[in-house]
Length: 459
Ligand code: ARG
Image (cartoon, rainbow, N blue to C red):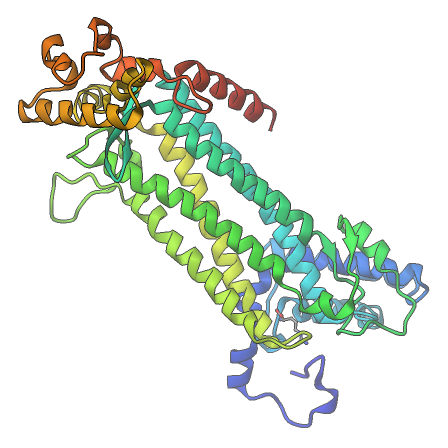
């Protein structure tokens, strides 16, 4: 088949080259953006007097028919036509003749693909933000369901201080809020139209890039035609943002895997979200969480592949850039799937409150509260730290918790300790004693929870 660019060639393209250089096996996903972009471009050409109104009508009708065929699965994409852009254009020409042949006036695939990818990324951002919001809602719903449940808080994977489960879940809500914010910021920078830059230098023809930008919902037009066709910062930025989302989900997955392990036994995952073993009949595995964690690596891989792909590229468009879509689509798909399944898994999970309550009794998590109690009685903190450390050592040797020591035993470590000390020891008392900003103080957690409920109801 004669290539659209076949004019200066005598020979046919080698079949191996066709296979090596094609992108139609992955870029057909851009067909909607491509058709929208072409319609906006054709409308601009008509306004500029570069094509006739009848030609515009034929182009628009042809493109919409092609879109219908693609959607019905009736369109035959051909590898010999390289990419989605040339496949659609060739189909348009075979339908409309000269009108179709005029569509590519004052346009290059270089500005065309950049525009398509920007529009695709814009929609991907919007969908991902919605999925993030839903994941936040799932976490908030769980926090409400277990609003009074106290869990061990960990540092270094060791019992640290008791906190409300709601406080832990809201920590993830805050993370995902930053992800949403980053994506909104990324959207602002990517929503700039490159159309009109043509191959790299612009054109001698009387085009109107403002109007195509406007028609396609872009907020601004490129400033430099060379930058417009060579910039893929927005792809890298989006995949970097996706990497952070994946990292956040991976951390949640890791935490929940630990909580679901028999040694912790804090968490009961819904059977519909677990899988079994082909040999061990008793197994109920949390493979979904493991894959959320594992797929994060894949998204990082996409980011590194993009960064590497672009690091040595001179201006302007280079064919290397075609590979950007492989990484972009993979990262976006992976994160979207992970978000959707994470939200469903969170919604269906149950916490084992008895086991958690037992765990809250262990590990001397009230030691810091006892030190604060001594500080309240004028003991310098470092001295209080030492006193409590000795008390913990004694309690641990007896296999007891601090609150199980008698007042006399406790007073042997410091005269400042009084009967009221039992009002600060124990997980419940500890949590109720918190009052500092952003802490796990029940009133503060309840207020933040309510704030999130209101915000997420509006989003
Ligand atoms: N398939 C190409 C890509 O995805 C489209 C642009 C090709 N431009 C060119 N001059 N060969 O980047």
